[in-house]
Image 1 (cartoon, one colour):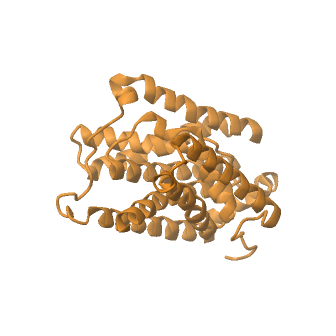
Image 2 (image 1 turned 90 degrees about the vertical axis):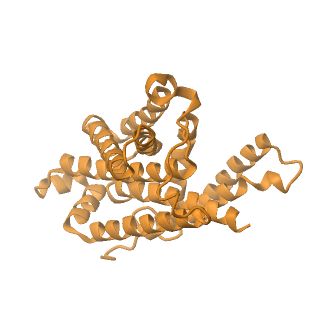
Image 3 (image 1 turned 180 degrees about the vertical axis):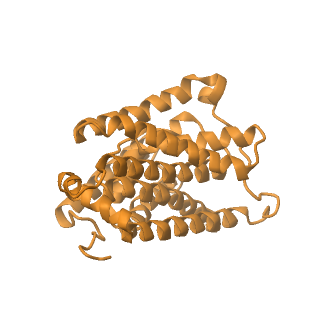
Length: 295
């Protein structure tokens, strides 16, 4: 039972990092990114391929974050010139194109077989209680990312992002380089998503393209909306509530005899839909909405 709860907490913590990255893009800046899972995949695959190829993790992890940041900045340079609805379509398409690239370019990504035997950090030193060690590592990363983003939210940079979110024309009239700030915010969110992907790949020691379906982005969005966009605490709470529920329900078929894998997937979709409807009716701003003037 302890191993089961440790595994769920680790996966929820990893998804919480991804949700915090999306909160920078949407919650603080108002940028629609329906392809958050793409940067999750970039971080996971870059680190996995480098580590399997013999690169030390101390180099592979920064390289993976750098690759996710570059991918985010490159996409932002093109897509952020579009209107909000077109931006949503482009980011959604980017995520799916990247997944198809991972699936078909087997010479680089091993295709549908995925990348196996990904090294796990400090595994030799914590053989007996490795899952507990990895959970502690994930929680430390969540705490560091949260603390850094709280500091950013209260900084002049964070205030400019929120000004752009509220009215970018007014921000531009005030002399702020709106496009540059938007690119920086998008790249920062992508880098945090890449960091989450690194933790994911090295925890499971295996990645394959279908782990990065568009519905993963949907779940992260729902977690952010559930918790309260614009509020880092809300992003964490939404991740724990929604993603904890989803991860926990994966094992429901082990204790409910008539619940097959197909029925479980359908039940999860129904559950997410019901949660979203109830939330929109009862708490449209989320469980922990952003408080005006909280900084």
